[in-house]
Image (cartoon, rainbow, N blue to C red; front, side, top):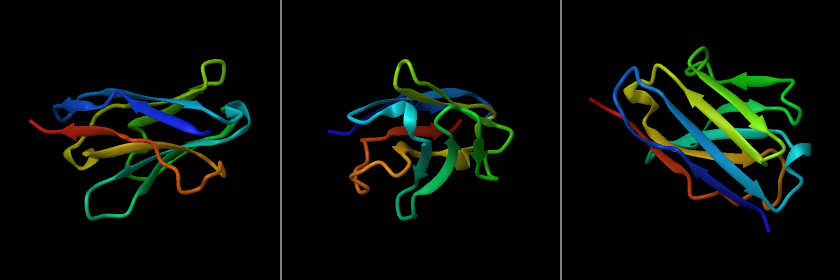
Length: 117
């Protein structure tokens, strides 16, 4: 079955950096685009970044463009999110997801990112 395990979150000061990882299994990782989302309590989940299956295309939310970088290693079935110049408004639980991977309502446990001084 599909499994997504996010890690790498933590507490960081404004201006700091974190690198999130997401280990995927249960589907043919290399054939699917992957996405990172984030969610703040009481708000809808927000799409942060997307990477195509072969890393040819990447897309970012305006709020993170120039600060975050999505990448993947298909040999390790892992997608990454490098987050630099972090701001307090980046505080959220971050999730990865395979684009069009079933079951559509499955989400991993996420990883908490807290940006605070």
